[in-house]
Image (cartoon, rainbow, N blue to C red; front, side, top):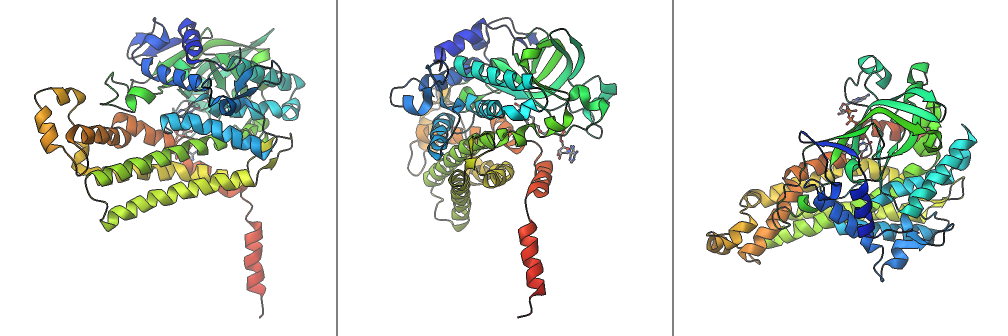
Length: 484
Ligand SMILES: Cc1cc2nc3c(=O)[nH]c(=O)nc-3n(C[C@H](O)[C@H](O)[C@H](O)COP(=O)(O)OP(=O)(O)OC[C@H]3O[C@@H](n4cnc5c(N)ncnc54)[C@H](O)[C@@H]3O)c2cc1C
């Protein structure tokens, strides 16, 4: 089949039958028809269509090594620096389309699957069958161009104990039994962004597992279809309120949905298991395979596109209302410019210093990307804050599109004009700024970026623990001993 079109994505999704609970109802209609998912699935469909635009074809796809079909570039195993650049260009094309507002476009986890599949020897340590399963699964996702999401975190019941100790072990998703051809999973996990609109769910190791027998049932990596029997998605309320693109330019396009995932005796066949037990290997799943590096390469590409969008939006806003000459406004704009150039420099450093990993995969230098993924969650919070400060009351003087043609049309022309924009143009711009900085969609984006890779506090601890600081300690020791 190879790289999908948008139509193919929508048709497959419409034919699937996931169990989705949303706002008190159990969904019966086709997912792409439901108001909570209609617009975002159209956006995802557009991303798949981009793979087929003639001028983008060579960026977005490459020839499958097994079928010879054109398949998505994010599945491509990079062997050279040029391959990495091709991957980045593909990821950039999708990121530009959403201005970085979509966090779960397929390239994110395709990158992980690519790296995991290449790390066969690592999986084979536990069982050669896991290595085969991983490779076969990656190839299936690649050849069918499936959209995957993941769920990693045990429910937030009591964080002072491990998942196995929460509510007598009855809450977190765990292996409850094995049968002749697989394992059975019960319990829940948080959170699956795009769960209801994806094809496949990757249930990968959660953060730190203890190596105790109690934690063994919680140590696993497997994949299931999103409509697997017994699997349920419990959605939050939709942030797409059915308004026009003018009124809610981001929410009406990019509302990805987040859902709690509940496993009610879900059977997982062995051929879809990549690790069972082995808490220590589960704990090093992402690092030892370089999956985290390739995932971060995608994320840094996306967040660079998002930072460019923020700079453009803030600049249009400050131009519009004539505040650009004030020094503190320039200081804020400078902050965004510096962030953008820093993000670009980190990416360039990571690619320039890339080298093959132990499995022969050209892998970006981890340290700049690790710094970037530790930096951006906090940095991002500044952009909406700057927009709110500079937009001020303009972010609340926001009639809707309907007012442009209603009795207020004249008032909008007169009283909502800006220095260089007429009333309707200014309204359009400020509604975008509102959806970026102040709407419920904007609030979710802030939370999402903050927790994208996990808890920033514990990530900082991991960074400190893993960063080689010894050369710098040694330099100071030598200076202390210096006699001249
Ligand atoms: C919008 C959104 C979308 C998401 N999408 C996905 C997804 O698609 N897939 C997925 O797997 N996950 C997803 N997540 C979950 C994300 O991975 C977690 O939010 C993140 O790992 C933090 O875990 P938590 O939310 O359970 O917070 P908690 O771990 O419960 O932390 C809550 C607070 O307590 C503190 N805390 C808790 N435990 C400790 C500790 N041991 N040491 C120090 N401080 C502690 C934290 O610092 C934090 O301030 C999503 C989250 C959000 C907000």
